[in-house]
Length: 446
Image (cartoon, rainbow, N blue to C red):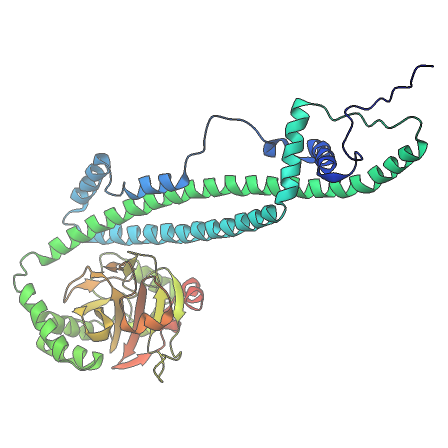
């Protein structure tokens, strides 16, 4: 009688449902059902562009095209000699710059969050590296050879029962592992696509910010040219102010001396005393007065401007008024962390009575707002207004640098530029919080 043949294809070295190979086949079979098409391995000759190359290309293209330069030149020519139009253009561009900077901050925060999410997914996949290898290996084998038929010895009923029991116990566990792996791979692809879109948006925002900054610089240059025409004595005035700054022991002494001994600052102080503004206006009248770009004196008295003034720069509050200063005293002003090269604007109408370096303040700008009030701005890299100049609330007056420049900023533990703002009344520091506009005061509170 011929020998009965056993049908096994192919004969495994060990029971079929044991070992790494069996797990690979089961995972592959389950994965072929559970895994979304967009995360299945695909062969392609194309490679994704390196997002860093896109950012580097943007960073090297900040000078502007010839068409943009021509447009700026035409805009300047159109408003040349018209102070109201020039001021209006400056105020508009500061608003646009601030909006773009805020969008950049939000975009960068989204990229940071996406980076964290991507890192979490990578950590999870790394922890499941063996399972991933089994799944992908099983997929590759499925593509070349179908899985072997689950055949057992026909004369071994007990083996059939045992295999069926083992298959029923193992498959749900493998299916759960496969579904988890599929969701992780799908999440990884989603994060990758969102990151690429966010980087593209960030690149566009950087280009927009560079364009708005070029426009601001051109408008500021035209403003200063129109103001300095016929001011041959300005250089000697600045030198005199610098000499007084070297001799002054503190800010109060500096203000008193420059407003007495520097002609431009003295005229500004006299103008501040002679122009108290129109008091007792209603809210609508106050806003209208502050929106007139042709004004040559404060639209309203400084003490009437509470709740109406914009922050001088976008950024997070780092130190509040009255907080411990780290030297046993209290903060006399507020400190904001800004973007690099951020535009700084005047918080209120007033006359510039000092602009230059001063002791630990670095670059210091002092604005006489009238009524005994002075505004101090420090920590900037460059001041773009001059002695005696009248500035409007929201008008650009300085530019931040690449990092902190204040001596007092060392303990803040940040590498970003820091803008220091101090309000003074009759020589004494006061809390600026009541003056900020409603939305601005929320930002100042952090």
